[in-house]
Image 1: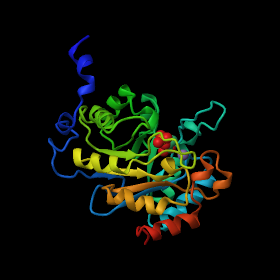
Image 2 (image 1 turned 30 degrees about the horizontal axis):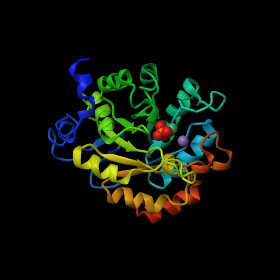
Image 3 (image 1 turned 90 degrees about the vertical axis):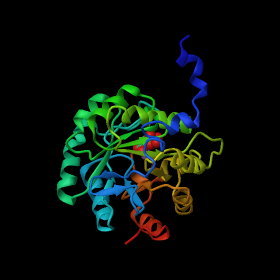
Image 4 (image 1 turned 60 degrees about the vertical axis):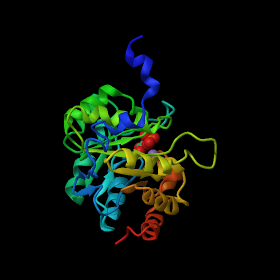
Length: 279
Ligand code: PEP
Ligand code: MN
């Protein structure tokens, strides 16, 4: 056993504080330029869009509506983690042209998930922000490669990771020279079947205390439902979140994935009005 093995359980708050992604190194809040907007600035931000890009027509419909409401940072996933191999896995590289066209037609910026190092290259022309899914949070080869890319990374917290482990994952990216990291709290495993995961609101406050990186709360994947997103968004932002992420689909009933948690455009309009982010 080497020293690291003996001491792993001693990862403590002061060590994390001294990380490159810790407040000890950078006391003031950091903001990340994500496409045309800043996440972590004065204004609370919103990332919205479908669970996955399904086809050009469906995607353009929702992107147009989001853009018209003043939201320019759009979820645009081509690669999906699914529990079952028989579930829709995303369009993969066949969707690249759709993303390029959406940017051209609507002038939006895109957040798109990478599951492997190969995806980083594939998406380099169309993604403004690379998303690391919860299940990839501990893929350190992927994190190191993203660190070298220099592009903003939306890093999601694995649903069984501690706050310390989450920040250690961010540290992997930062140590390769990239501090353009947006932390995304998306809920931890819980026992209540009425909510998909438990959004860790105190965890957001602790992340903000320990790290200057901006934090976004993913309401859709944590709650797994649309009806309580507004009060939970307020709670997350009160705890220090710099904004929220929600899934929006033009016709959620027909969605290829996560149908129950995607808002339709009317629900989305009400939601943004309720949380004071609408125009
Ligand atoms: C997603 O945001 O598309 C997603 C699948 O979320 P998570 O990785 O948090 O489960
Ligand atoms: Mn989803």
